[in-house]
Image 1 (tube, rainbow, N blue to C red):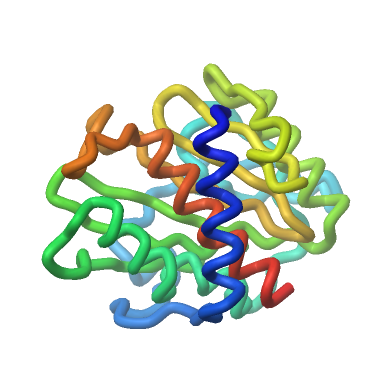
Image 2 (image 1 turned 45 degrees about the vertical axis):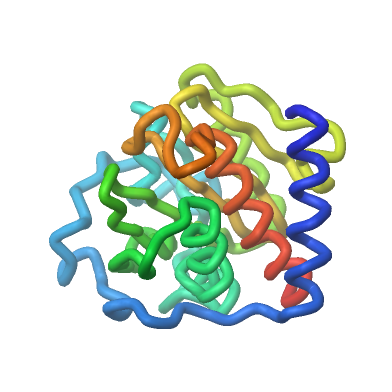
Length: 217
């Protein structure tokens, strides 16, 4: 990651720690996979803890990965932040949008996903909750191993967390028992008045959400 990304990450953390963070607001509400038409069936995968079949809604790996363990009954406040005011404000600012984009969110397979409907395509941000940090890291490592053209995010740019990006516009971070995945692969290579790349957009939105998680662990 370039030096500019380091500076952007630092600014994002500093500004959000001052302004505070909010959970999902202005969305259509949390839907289960059975209720939402945005959810698609996932192939069964094997849990490293239970050995039972589970599901994974990641979408950019192509093969099954371990499930994150025991599923919570619903998304935590931290997971809900992927559809909160801060990533929404950051997105509208970066792309100079005249109004906030329509969003819809789902809760399935221990994953809270917020889909931002942009004119150029869908932006998907998800937070997957594992039963503990060790399980989350195991799951993250499996995701990285299976992801196409994955490149570790190193140095200051990873903010001290395991992280990687893919050439098609995804950024994935692991913090505590969460795996954060910002997937901009449905968007064009560049967008907005500044022609920001989809990879840079995914990274900046990731740091915005991570700043909220740092403030509210």
